[in-house]
Amino acid sequence: MGTMSGVPDHAEPHFDVPRQVTPFSEIGTPVERWPWWAPAGWVLVAATSVVFYAIVLALSPLLVAAIVGRRLWRRSLRYRRSPADLRIAIIGAGWSGLQCLQRFGEIGVEKVDVFERFGDIGGTWSPHLRYHGLQIHGSMTVTSFDGFPYSEDPDVQRGKVMAEEVERYIHRFADARDLKSRCQLNSTVQSVDYSSANHTATLTITDSGTGEARSAGPYDLVIWASMAAVGSIPELPGAAEFRGWQLHTVAYSDAEFNEIVRDNKKVVVVGAGKAACDVALGLRRGGYDNFTWVMRRPYLFYKYEALLHNASPMNKLRGLTYLATVLFTGVSRRFGAILHWSSGYLHAVGHPHTDFTRFHGGLLCPTQRRELSNVPYTIGNPVRFQDDQLVFEDGTSLPADVVIWATGNSTGIDTLRLTKDGTAVTLDPNAKLYNHFIVPDFPVLASSTALWTTFGPMRATNAADLAVYHLAVRKERSKQQMHRAAQRQLSRNSIVHSFIWAHDACWLQLWVHFHIDLVLQGITPVEAFFKHAFEVFVLGKETPLRFNLLPPRRPAARTRSGLESTAAAAAGPGGSE
Ligand SMILES: Cc1cc2nc3c(=O)[nH]c(=O)nc-3n(C[C@H](O)[C@H](O)[C@H](O)COP(=O)(O)OP(=O)(O)OC[C@H]3O[C@@H](n4cnc5c(N)ncnc54)[C@H](O)[C@@H]3O)c2cc1C
Image: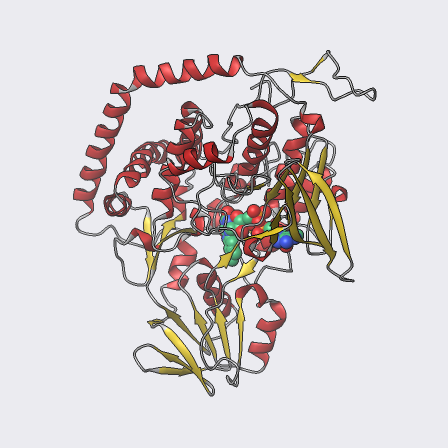
């Protein structure tokens, strides 16, 4: 197989693909036949694409003006404060926290503390949170760290890997960049105290082992970098008397799987998303049939090989039409669903539909689709427990020794205690974030999870850039200014409910609106958005979507005498793009 790349000093001469990796060439041949109406769908997609590219062409003078204007504006930017003087805290050492830490180093921020409640880095992919059978849905192309591709072998890079392998990759990145030693492990952040007079935050942290509390700070900004820390379980009546056990997928480790198989426990798996698919597949692949899969409504998934294709000329052409499909989803989610079906991108686990509020965004490869089509499921809405039964809305029930809830995750930010000048503050779950990043009412808190610009860890580079731009470049903003700007944003996105976990909404539509918001606010350069979308959907590769918000030259840190050095520091990666 190919050679590993991106880590010159740690590179091993050869990269043998571990067992947990499924290269693109092995993910299987699609089994589905095109439906009878497929030619009509192709005509629709082709016509829509022509309309889309005609609109782009008509708007091109405006787009060029916007690109040139923004470039000139960027040249006028100056630092009002040295990034070296900023003090930042990052909560979470998953892939986002690590990528953000790395990027801060590149753009001149030296005082960064990372807090992680577990004894190791890795987040979702670590043994603390991953469930038995967790497999990444995207390819490694869109899971790579900036400048540190998983592999140089395109076949492997486009393939899927198991969680254990993602974890190893995260460690490889952290080792190569010496990031782990900069993370404070076993450190659970309990509270954030904001002093409005000083515009700073102080954290209270407890040692996850001993419970001992300490404080850290002051910080100019605290970045929440946790996407899926907490499993969501519905609270059903009768749970206390239930004779079996119930657990969320975050607690369904290899040990629980082994116990289920050893004792032949009757299992009910509840959910229709990625986790439910993985759990059902994991049980099936383990040769275990004593389970029932229940979902309320079926989800739609991407066909892996359609979205993250092998960049053949035909697939590139198809990728070009996909750009049109994505942007039309921003206009109408029903039309977006029809276009997705028409271009052959969608797969329904359960019966097909066009309700894009039930579009998961996970990706199923042909092998997974084939295997899942042999796993029976039932539709039902669990409402209570009774003795050893899970009872459904329609009055039917299922006997269960174990109920596995594959019912989604939340970021966990609502577990933080917040105070402002000593008074308790509650985060409004519906309040919009300024630039989809900063909490206007509590401006020392920002969320890299809400700033979901793109796939994979690379997106967290943007959190670092926007933090420095906000704190050290643009004029200070009042709470009212931030509120007003946030209110004008099209996309729903709060720090509690990141749009990417949206319920009763279409995440893809919100994602398009989110980018429109950031372009109109001058954060995302319009050409950067198109370049990124072109790379991912058409060329089958990913580099970070660059905000290019930082002035080309960086001032040096304060000298010991407290005077600002006049010498300009060499432009870092953020300043030279
Ligand atoms: C079941 C499941 C499957 C997924 N599959 C995919 C996939 O296939 N492809 C994909 O791109 N994405 C997938 N995701 C989304 C995935 O979570 C993210 O893409 C990625 O792991 C997010 O990284 P992160 O660093 O933002 O957050 P996380 O991985 O959630 O890491 C957050 C870290 O913050 C820590 N933390 C939380 N609260 C505190 C606190 N108070 N104090 C200190 N530390 C704290 C947590 O312990 C954790 O280590 C999946 C998520 C789930 C739940």
